[in-house]
Image 1 (cartoon, rainbow, N blue to C red):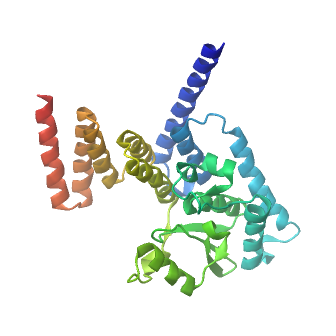
Image 2 (image 1 turned 90 degrees about the vertical axis):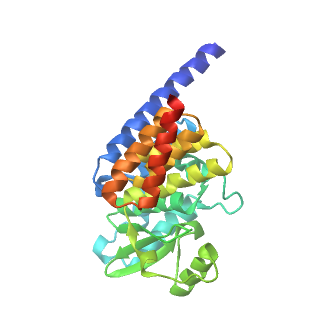
Image 3 (image 1 turned 135 degrees about the vertical axis):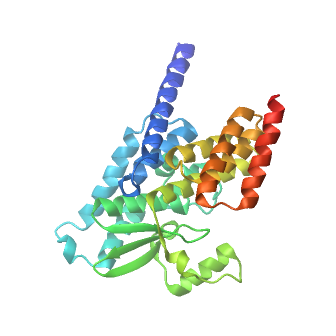
Length: 297
């Protein structure tokens, strides 16, 4: 019975991961605005931890959106102020659901896995940001992720007003002074705010930022095999990301997967040449391909 049960779980996990890869491949061909952030993040979670039962997490996402809607019930959408929208988001995510940033175990892999974040009600800024964006967009509100370095932030635009919000800090609205302090914390004392830090990023970039944390944590843990799997997942949903093909080639070469490494580097050379990647990086990749081919002989 135990052996049979284990086999059944393995079969379900394999099927779940195949479905997740199929979803990510589909995302890779979608227009950015058509990507479902939360659903795609759950697919990434399936690849990271083998989750197969995503139905409870989907129900939670629905409940999260419903909780926000309940807090604004009876008010016409156009009559809501920006502050009322923010109060509803905080009321649902923080006060009712208990979501918070995980400062105590910031580099725990669970913090970059949306399923585990939902289980634990704690996570990284970008994982929490995805939940805020999911709940806000379900109301028809315009919320985007920002290109702020080192700490993911979100922005809500409503009724001609806008606010930059820290999902890791309980949905707190950040002033210019707060942002200046934050950029110095994340980028060094000499860093200053730049217009690009306020630029909105697309859904695909938000998901890449989420899963890049998984890759980095595996690399710090000296698990190039798992880092390579993370890069593979990112390439499924963003096959046009030139730099990721180079990373894939380097990791696969480190693992001794010569044929796979050559294929990744060749894709990097093809895409990189068309994208205007630096000649130095292209030359390095071409040299590595030659070395790898020699190892096959």
